[in-house]
Length: 274
Image 1: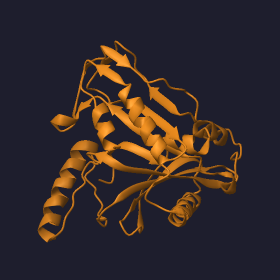
Image 2: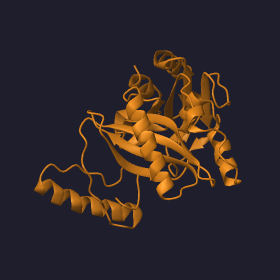
Image 3: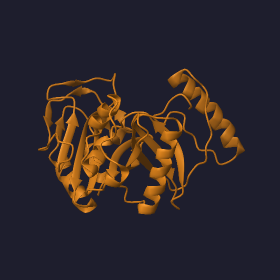
């Protein structure tokens, strides 16, 4: 669907009949979801990885990419687990994708934070998917592996200041993984869950941009989770010297996360990263 995202209106067609049927159903879903039935068609990539490049651009002609994020663990075309850097791509592909993202931003004279998303095939060929002109839910993993505060960078750019660092000053520091904690039932087709957070216990965490464990949320014990908003109630971000250490820390932190009162995907998150 041209007018929206969130996986609405996605269909795979492998022949003419499926294309005709999918086109009609996609238009109907797009119209119902966004009030706009326009759709576009693109190549279906086999064995895909969802890789996105974080960029920032200022008003002085400076644009950098702050490495990439792997966002391939999804349900209903919505991300569940994100990590940085991607374990799938190498330095050569990272550079090529980053430079393409920067070129795109410069071509439209973009300023501020943005995310350029790509689909990467099993042969590591990559294809532009979309650009989100904002910070993403998963931006903390980029903060963790760069040691930079992307919100601060965005505010500096908005104030007319130049970017704090050049491309050659940005380095990868370890490995970071984020798990989205959602009020939904993975055993019932991820049906959104509602109820009261009777027990809401979080792992020990820090609010700093780069720490071993970071827990971002906007709820507290006793709050009611309604059906009127997105099902995500928190984000758990861990950082380690390497991917193995980050995975171990994520599993340990999820084991310390106790939510009673409604269904969540905490156990699914643990299974997703084993």
